[in-house]
Structures are given as structure tokens and as C-alpha cells.
Length: 87
Image (cartoon, rainbow, N blue to C red; front, side, top):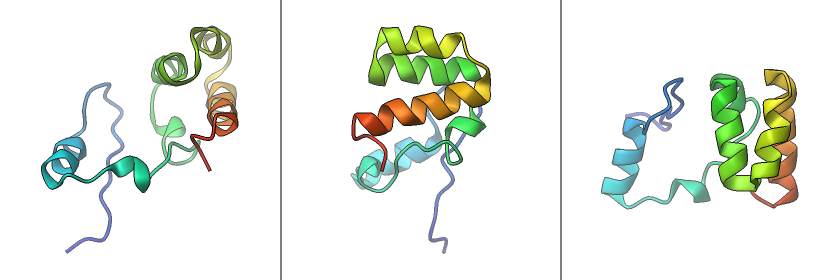
């Protein structure tokens, strides 16, 4: 039996881990936060912009869109940290 589940996917759609969490009624947000190394480096820049727009603001999305992927990932984590969404 495994102690972890890899829920990172380069595809922009729900991951099977979400269905597992829903079935088991587990709130994964209590155990996992999006980090640069754990999430943002594994998804396309468009996804970083989308997440920034949905979680932070449309202004943040515009700022992220104008950056290179690595800079956008760092900025997204910084903005989410400021909101208390990342430890």
C-alpha cells in the first residue's frame, strides 16, 4: 500500500486523484498546498495564469501572462503566500 498519491498532471482537467478524494470524502486542501516545486513547475504557463486569475485576481493573471514561466511560477506562489493560501 502506498503512503502518497501523485495528483499532478500536465493535462488541464480533473485528475483521478480528485475522484478518489471525493469518494473517500477527504479534503485534500488540508494536506496539500500548491508550491512552485510541487505544482507550478509541472503545469503549463497557461495553467499558472488561469490559477492566478481564479485564486488571486484578474489583475494578477494579466501580470503572470507577461512573465516567463519560471518567473510566473515564483510570482504565483508569492501572491498565494500573501493571501495565506501557501505556507
